[in-house]
Image (cartoon, rainbow, N blue to C red; front, side, top):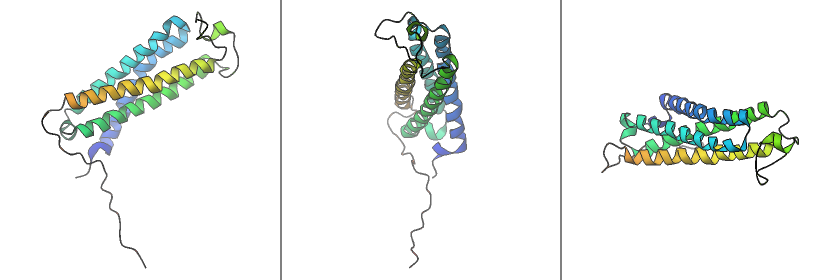
Length: 181
């Protein structure tokens, strides 16, 4: 049996739910960049929570699929792929937004212009330092919460908790083994 994890419908779902997760993550980030205040850094974590909610919903949606609902490995793969897509899209869009909000991203600015009202440890004259903080949150935060949501829902929401059907994790590509000598 060929695995449906890599078929067109599943790949389309990875992109749909990954894009939705990225958009919901980016809403608080855009407000953070617009307000540009140190006190609003908590919005990064609000974005992580919204990202996790979308991945939770996607994994609940996977339970209704006949193939995925019976195989925890298939649900794990699908959830992690949607998380990967959402994380990559978030990282790319955050980088583009930083270029828009801080045109001289790699040049020095007055310290209060980059992240106003920041304490001395978080103050930086370069907006690229602020970009680094946000990208760390995008990569570590979204990947962590997406992976957490995927692992929890893959095992907790399975229909049959006592058995797990094996999942085909290969594409069954025929390999020619005869050599021409």
